[in-house]
Image (tube, rainbow, N blue to C red; front, side, top):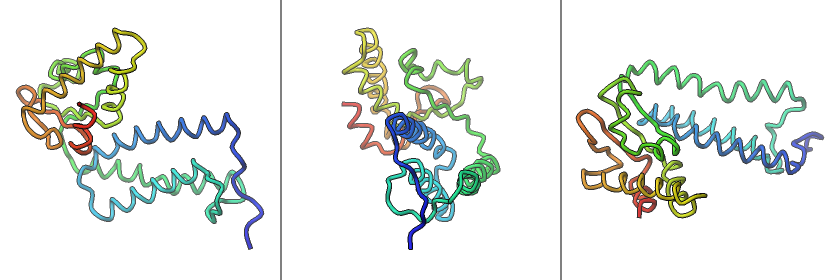
Length: 198
């Protein structure tokens, strides 16, 4: 017997909110994983389980799902329990004691100044690792071809050219030295980065 409750149908406003939430979560998740670059199988499982739970509950695909509770209060309690793993893993990342200063510029930052070695005064250190996530690479690629204004398209093209130029220094997936103790790494796979930076 199936339960007599479940997720309601999504109207247009709810569907837009779901898509926005999934996009924001995906961006956050990509950055979160930078804190745990080499997870153990147990940590990887916890992340995967929490990720599947989040995406299943937000997408609400209408299929049968035993995890759907009868009340909103029960749903909140289950969500809090299932997603608490992220707080636990943040504590684990802090416990690791990795003192590397990590900089994750967004698209606007790279449009304003793609010279990552010039971020030192803002970062407050002359030694840091700059992570360029795939979401940002995709946005830059989109903007260089379809930006709203010629100025935006040129700034995006300039940022892409600069990032592409770093390939001469070694594997962008492994990380390259930009200047002094400033390194840059493209996340996740260099193959993806090269396809964006053509």
